[in-house]
Length: 188
Image 1 (cartoon, rainbow, N blue to C red):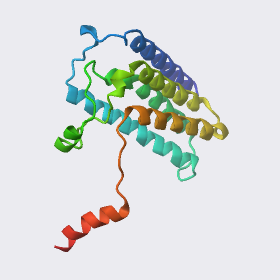
Image 2: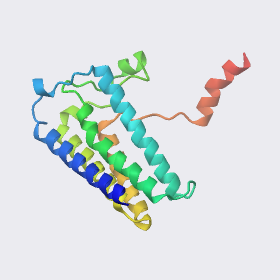
Image 3: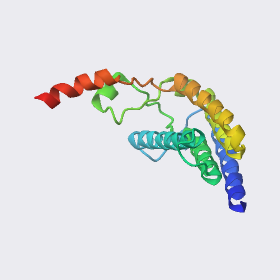
Image 4: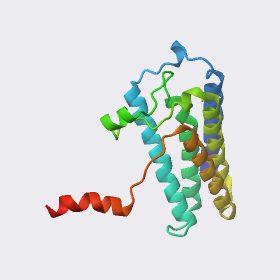
């Protein structure tokens, strides 16, 4: 129990500290805002971090839906980790934009940025939404099992709103499209 409280406290301090540091310097890109990582490495880190947040979120839903056994420590730990990841996420955007383009997706579908130009055009809104999601994740980690679903659903709405504003919409193939593409190769 003591370890969980310390972990939760550390996550909150990190989330508040990172968010306030990023927000203070967000107005004008300058030499102090250029990362030592390449654009490609920064993009890969963003995608990995978001994939990890999504994977953790899937486990939360499996616990809440009864597919996995409920484990309070596991649930809270995953939300604490997600909160810290979300607080760090804006720091992975370089000062120079590298938004999604159709050309970049054709050239490298797995490595193309999913970020829209609006990330850089509306940086303060992006920061605020990232911090709000981090705060909600932390708040969800403190919720009782009975209250957790409502807070996680609130988080889902925040994620969807942020993605709608700042991320290229992902087009999911239907089962029929997948089968149509897979069938000719399989029968030849």
